[in-house]
Length: 419
Ligand SMILES: Nc1nc2c(c(=O)[nH]1)N[C@H]1C(S)=C(S)[C@@H](COP(=O)(O)O)O[C@H]1N2
Ligand SMILES: [Mo]
Image (tube, rainbow, N blue to C red; front, side):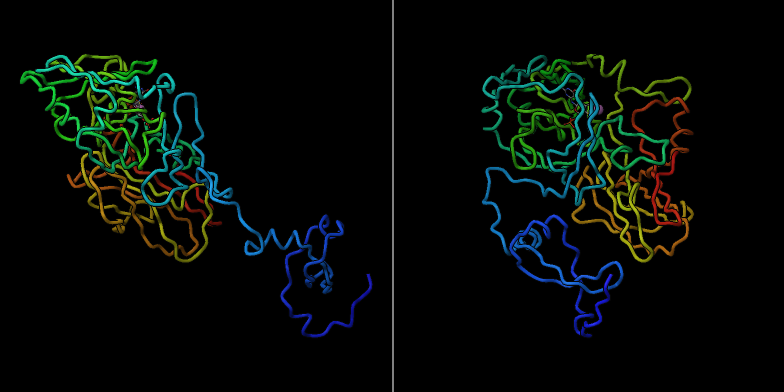
């Protein structure tokens, strides 16, 4: 190759542009600019850039598309739920803040998503009430409404035992929305609840006819019938046109596509509360009606399969508790030997995902990072070892909220520490 000796100093220090593709160069497109490139031999050579190439790289040179009927996510962002046949999981590691975009809300269906015409929809409240009533969706919307932000979590929300698990796989069966609807207490006042009624059955209109027995006290306290989610009608996957929501309680009790509530003086002993959604505790005993979701937290950055660089970084994650507000999140960067208080994003809401952040300087050695949540009742998120000690080794798959550890390896790669 011929040496180009005639280059001036000025030309040699001109910043080099990124190489243009062969296709554009050979395509004979109109020359829009000439840039200097360094050849593989270190020569400075002139290359022509076509008009088309310039436009691709410069958004100020081309008119963008007009507004559309629906917004879209950037084509560079591709968070997905990775569904199985019966559930899909929120990609916690891809999210910011604490509101889950509705299309990324986790899903758990026992018999798929039914199609329910809102004109045909009704909710019946009967049994031990003064006045049985049937409410249409329009009826529900006429009552005073409430809006409240809280998390939903499946009680089967734990996976472990592998280095290659992301937050989504470990605990992606939790999401958070701003829900709008009518308080169940408002409807209870309409129908009247007989003094002897202590339980109610909540029944869905999916092919599973999913039903659960709920203490009436929860109905008076903070149960909601929600018809909206993050400012729009609730999504079909979340129970369109209306579902029960029991803040802080295991997701299964928040019956979707809700069609019937029956008041009674005893629980109904449905399949979901006898053969399912019970868990072994010590001495061969089984725990039933274990409604409350215990406090939990997870670091979402850094996590598998992310890569970190030496220096300062912000360790980020979320914490939540079905018992109330998160009081404190502690972060350890040395495998649990010492703990440091993380900053909580205000306002800290009741029974809600709460973002936490902790500044950490990684100096390059191997490090085990982990977080633990402490809620306002003083409950401290346990380790898996503590859970096993308290519940026995055969505790099954429900209500597992162990501390999650990430191992930052010497090369900056991050893996899950199997427990
Ligand atoms: N009718 C009905 N309600 C249901 C279910 C269902 O399959 N059918 N799944 C339950 C379970 S196990 C959970 S964890 C939550 C999941 O709610 P989501 O799909 O809106 O996240 O809904 C609950 N309510
Ligand atoms: Mo669930």
